[in-house]
Length: 320
Image 1: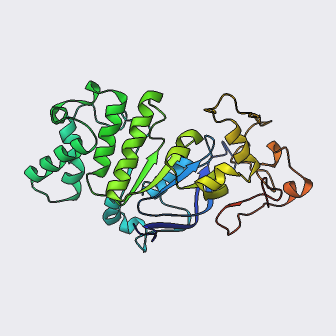
Image 2: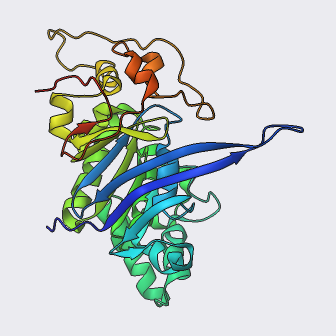
Image 3: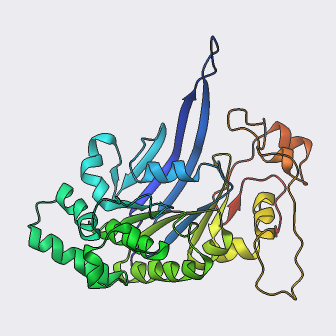
């Protein structure tokens, strides 16, 4: 295993122009603002946060579906730019949240799996079919599934098919956008264990997008917690779960179900609504909902530090 990053981002941003309506100026929505991160072979970087925090926008940029507005993204040291996408996309594949919606219901599973090879390679048909059959076996499906249609499978089986398709081009980075949130709890564990086994075997780098800290705890090596498009805390999984620093992270963890019913747990209920990304408050964006907010928080925006475990907060928890 190497610790050399396969992908790196520096000050990555994505903005959208939003119409203000008739005779009104358009406004800029900063879906992702100033993210720095790296993904390493054999490791998982998880990105967590509430709906609307920018997680899926980040996934689309990494998967080369959308172009960053600002900042740099590199893959194997080469800039990820639209003119390079044709060559680079095979190295970054994505698994979506809804396994049924991402599979063509009119195609047989074998055709679905071979399609990336048809589009991106000159591999002969016999080799494409052999690779597709091998991939079915790798993700725990049977040979007879090759000629069936997506509607004939359960949700967990469909997600296995989606994972198999993502692996057909031998990618280096897999973007997992809420890959188990649409599945029953009994199936989630099986899919997560499959992903971990594949990562260990193939030395894949994962960018794991989720709102569920319980799931993230099972798979992540590093975490980024996002709020309104910005990272508010980042660090190793064990350090972040043991001693979260940002009040937002503390609140998220307090809402995570506890396995031990005898253990004391205080639920933190955040007051107020999530501010609009079109009208982010001055200072710290979390200040209107934070129980620790001081006048300084409403006047200045805190920035992430440079340590291994850091938070964008003037008055962090668990310091010292």
